[in-house]
Length: 453
Ligand code: GCO
Image (cartoon, rainbow, N blue to C red; front, side):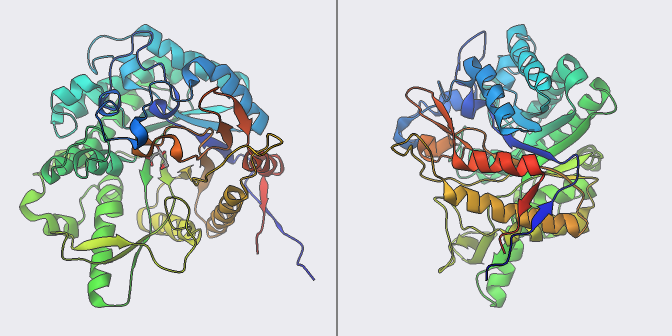
């Protein structure tokens, strides 16, 4: 006999929602006074993006935001996380403000609030103004000061209506994909620049928190969204265990420790030696501003083995055999529980907000116009079961956002990776809610998920 599924209930005000980012959905790359960002530049360089695709039109959200807000309402979302394109607000990244850019986000926020959806803007999601990159980008300290100015002016313009702010999205990715591997804009491959970028991103976070606090009502909640993963050694060998610890220091602790403890991990500093930038106590104090919540973006774990081909960290990620995979990563729901309980135990953030979780699936429309993405339903369900476990273990979770509301531009991988609860026909821009979207609407409606055990 089959055991009847148990309904795992969530707290009454739990923020169910979905996330997107500006460059991935907006399009309208040069409209209404928007300046060029590093992604506008990068996508035009041959060989950087899958099939030479760009975000110039993306899913045309800039013109379809009303239709998209209606979609969110149809799903019953309580919260919507989006990012503000710095280049719409300040086309050159400093000085002159473009009122039309601010107006777009102001109108979007009103549209959301009218529908009872809490706006959760992120100030930075990879799209640095090209003018600031021309002056050196994140490896330059100046960029952090410019970011704080931008944060303050956005806070003053929109702060009366925004309950949750996120400073940065995934500073690890901004620094490492942008300045170390070069897979993301601006496409630089230089470890020194990547480390300097890391420090200035963190500094800019602290400065932006200060600027926002000065500009927005006290009730506003401010946090940051980090991409975090449990790191497991590929075997019990001592070498692999050391490699996993090194990888963890770079991926997770390099961000969590300065933000919550006001210090860089000693292991990181020792490992990187003279490459590690000189950091003042004052900067560390600025970085460690008290936060209202930690945003966690979770997709998978990292399995790591010793690899001397990688200087300094001597570690490389591997794909463990015999596991279930998505188009991009191993599927490992238990990792979300492990991660949430770990950050809670080690850093005691006031609140934790799952700001991204999701999976790419090669979706398409069936003959009857439906999208049957069972794989995504299974993925989301399993991760919600783990989220619920973490709640029961005492982690103060306030919400869960699916990446993503819509299929969109997945950076260097272009439009091939579909993450949406909503299918988008990239030719016609027609939106179709997927099976997973309908399923998620049901989760929200009953404020709970059926146990998959
Ligand atoms: C990131 C972002 C998103 C991605 C998502 C799927 O991780 O780069 O926050 O922009 O689209 O994580 O990879």
